[in-house]
Length: 223
Image (cartoon, rainbow, N blue to C red; front, side, top):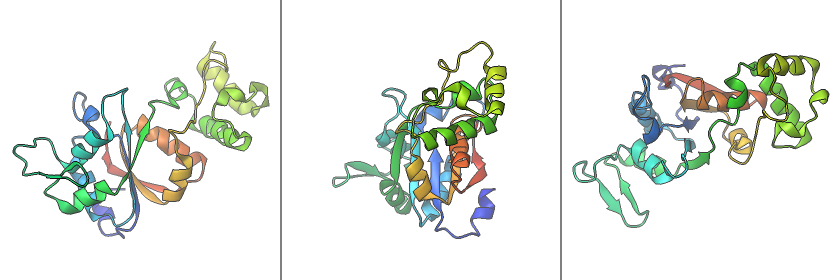
């Protein structure tokens, strides 16, 4: 789905923004800098909830720096910003954008909770089946499930793709940084950000595993 198609729809739909942050603004072929203006426009027009998910890189980007980036605040001396004593934040000249970002929910997540499988070619359906099995058993780590209790087709795919790697050494981890309960409450929502086949794809697979409704905004995805 493209942004110009969304503008004609209701602005009450919630937004999920993934890894649109300073760390990903430069250095690769397709960065989040390209989609930033469109993401800002979506935030300004949104009358629903806004959830911002970001990586912190062990002390790199913070909630405050992500807020500043999305608000377009990059030079305090020349951008005409004001310091709001109440919120202790620099406020953008675009008040609607700033207001929605101040009211947004910010979630810090770990990097790559599905990547051990994704990067080695494990099928989407296999990962979805494992996540569903984890939910049924109320475990946060796939390695807590005996391998022989998985469906045979899942066992075969794991064996084929992971080669000599043992089930106990390669796992899916769904800790608190994968907020399934929040995604369910946010549903339905528009999803945007990146990377296309990395962090954003991980969240998509989680949504697909738990029947969480979303629309991917293709023109606002990078990577």
